Length: 149
Image (tube, rainbow, N blue to C red; front, side):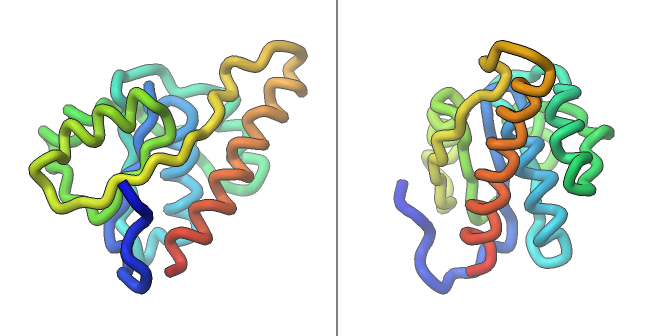
């Protein structure tokens, strides 16, 4: 779908990725850090993974604590509280497909932000951490631009 209507304020946003282990919890933590008082923020995955220690470390570097994140699926979130969001931002193809499927009868904007998976990077600890930093910084920039509208 297209970007949200200009001037329309987002009150609740959901970030979705494949496992709710790296990209979507990173986006959730960043969005909460910058907009937590004005926007309700959650994250979920197409499937459930395990919290990634590199994700936690990359956020810790900028003063955001994501150590208590518990991965969950989109279905679990829907069962627990419903998918009552103004905006769902999917960060992986699988999550985008799932978000469109779950919201086909809802009036919710779904945006796809293709985001690289830093877990695919090979090399030293520092090289891997650099990949996570890149994703963190890219998401932070995009989130602050999108949610400040």
